[in-house]
Amino acid sequence: MFDAVPERARWRYKPRRAARLWQSKALRAGLPITVLALCALVILALVRDETGTQGFLVGLGLATLPVPLLAAAFRWLDRVEPGPWRNLIFAFAWGAFAAALVAILANSFAIRWIATATADPTSADTLGATVIAPIVEESAKAVAIALIFFFRRREFTGIVDGVVIAGFTATGFAFTENILYLGTAFGEDRELGQSGLESVTAATFFVRIVMSPFAHPLFTVLTGIGFGAAALAARHRRFRRTALPLLGLLLSMAVHALWNGSASYLGPWGFYAVYGAFMVPAFALLTWLVIWTRQRELRTIASELPAYAAAGWLAPAEPPALSSMKARALARDVARRTGGPAAAHTVSEYQRFATSLAFLRHRAGRGAAGPDFVAREQELLHHMWQRKDAASPALIHAARATGRVRVPPPYRDYEGYNPYRR
Image (cartoon, rainbow, N blue to C red; front, side, top):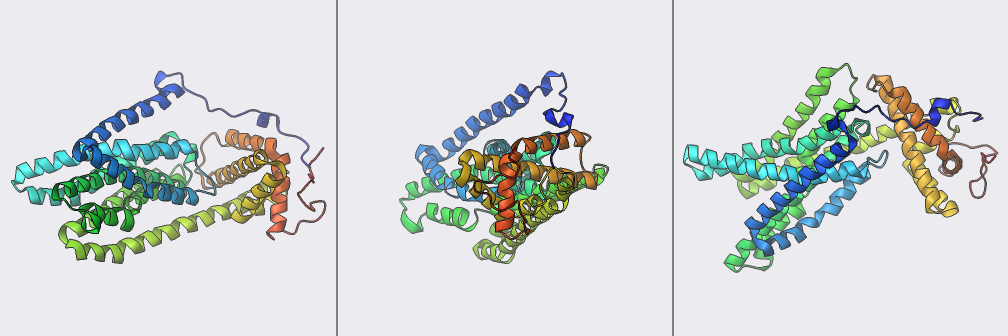
């Protein structure tokens, strides 16, 4: 059934690199790390100077609490084709250090300039929070999404990728911002001698950590959706590929302005009204959209991979198994029980390569694939072939166990049986 591997598929595809120094791999990796490290040193010094050492430590401890939950939620959304951790770590670091530093410096400068020009510090603070902050902060966070979109294009394939990267960027930004707000609130409590539930720290913690940990992610996710939609557009649709990210950015600024304005202009009750009438439904709608998009990705796998099964690269039962999260998890579990963690890891890699292959073929059908489509396709097939003996039987077993397909003999069971054993 699988008699031969095309000769070129034995090679590992490597994109041709330009000889210019600025395009070298070491420079492209070292430059952002250096920039982020410098931004981290500056922003942490600024926050500590604003809050004091004790306030900084209290704010750091409290601001850390929602980070694992938000990171796990966004990573869960990305289960069909998990993006590399290096992109997510970069996005989080950019939001926490670079974007936060730009926001603090630009917002402070703008508010001081407005206050000087109008001689009205109160109006300057309100205008800065409602107009300046949304524009500056969302633009700064959008840079991380744009960098991954342009420089890690093969790993940015659709709306879910945009949402996840935007979510990690905004989570990092909110982390640093929460340290500042909570640390400042703790300093005020120390000056006033307040403590307990009536303290400023408790109120700030309730509003920022308990009620609205998803606020910044919700704003920036709109930008991520714009970039994700642009990634799905055909390559010749240049206007669409440019306009969609800009539209997403403008929407994120508008929603951010509405959120800040509700507290500045409408008071506490107006804030809660906007929170209940707009923010919660908007968050629910976006959650539904992302989950629906993920289900659409599974349908894409089910529709694209049978072509490779017909060509002999996959067994007929594999596409149905690969298009089901339950079957994929069962295949990894069976491989782990029979072959240990290494076998489960092999199955996971096989699933990831097969998913990338399905999305690549889908983009090619839409005219959105790059000129390296053939070489990339052969690379993915080669990696799948190397793992087929371990992964294919587990997927066949999972397809049968979950009722995805009726598998006739000789695919009777996985444990101890390998239909491709030579």
